[in-house]
Length: 413
Figure 1: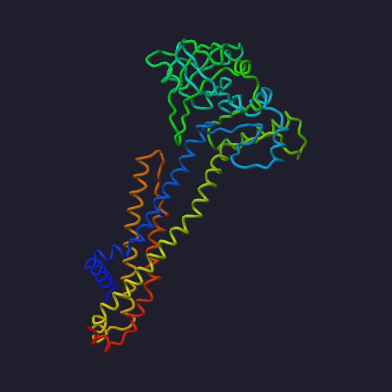
Figure 2 (figure 1 turned 180 degrees about the vertical axis):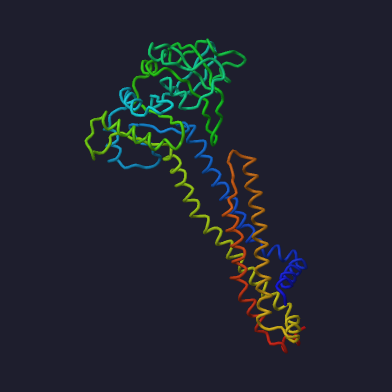
């Protein structure tokens, strides 16, 4: 019997028993759909965090010189004590980095933690819980801000300690509805500042707005809130390829500025936003470790169902098997027929699962802020699972069919 005929017979059996075939494959369909959808959502969120969250927080093609590292998660008490002994990052450190990295597009100094949260008052309106940042002029270049109106903070504003402010889009929308904010005076913790510019909307990342802030010249910020425990130097490079060399130059300049001997442990951190991305990936690795167990349970259950249905099919088609053997079919032919039927059945289940998972991922992407990117490897894995289940759980029924005695089979009703 030709292989094409074997496939045709297998498809015909599935067509004749549509409802039974569907319920047979339900476990595989659900498991494969879950695998494709979850992998798509996690892969999409990994890319989303890397492309959007990191650049939104520290800027694209940017690294930072910090007192403490960008780290999310648990750190022990001893490490906390060591970090607290580190010196503050100062203006002289920023000057050293500027001199050491001449190819940088911008080098800024901005206030660090803790970031003050204050109310912004304009006339009889108040906008509560706004993040206040003290910055030097290049910070606006580092963050790729686009100005909707007015102008940015300049070096002269910083040098002359001018009481000026640049506001984010959330402040513009909620406090200055139908009014041009530029030239208006606002009050922040009792101090008056003149709005000189408004920044275009950057939007939300994972539901977090990046437009609810006010920028003040760093000296004016420190006059109101005092010096922070940690300032940060941000360095924006022309391209991503130059980040590594720029980090090396900045590290060398910081060692000299902090009078560190060769081999001595640095009392500062030079890093990119990769720590944020790695933290997110560590969370998704935990999810990925759970997914195989869930999928395996569904696949095994689905495989057992396929095996039982195929055994039932062998019983129902005993006379057919006897006729085929009487006409010269060898045990290998019978074994191949039923094994191919099991594999085709399971593969169709895998295809249906891929389609369902793809559709579910698309629905999640449309109905929520969670992105979803279907991966080719997850599709191939899903199809391989389907075919593998067919082979693994189809061997026993196929062997049973091949071992039937043709005389007994012909006597079966």
